[in-house]
Image (cartoon, rainbow, N blue to C red; front, side, top):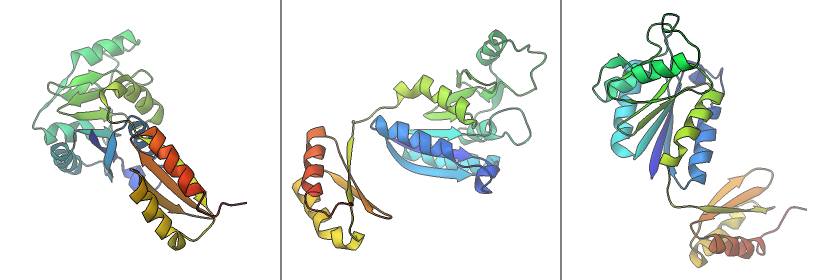
Length: 228
């Protein structure tokens, strides 16, 4: 399964808010064996949301969109997603019923709170107000991290793939000096290798067979200089 993650918000692009949602989602999806192919941040603009979501839903098995849910003037994600699939927005009775069960009166709710693309499956917001939605492989989640996490966990079983395993080897050598051993471990074992330089170089070995990954990591660890 391959997935694109789209985060919506002017505040993300301005650097006023850290994009922790994307990092958390990528980590959870990867742990489930799902391949995250794209992470894109776009402004609170209906045309941009519609264009990116429409492009990605044609390329990937699923698109996860976070941020911009609610009834305020800059909460336009549902409208953008509706435009991407050519549907109108309509009040969702199921979402309204959930809100009533949570103690919200319909008369007190701001107009548009429960508007979802026509025919969408509503996702209940266990820790907030604005509901999420699922339609045509598009999953729309809130931007508030606590709300997003709770909602994703309610649908996490819908995302699965081949389990992958990872081991890390730390080398106290320049990255360029490690190229021969990186090439050799890839030839010897069915693993991929990521190289991440810093004070030391972190070599991340991943593969679909746990024993192979462990053996490859042990082989490589014996052939690099380790930090003291």
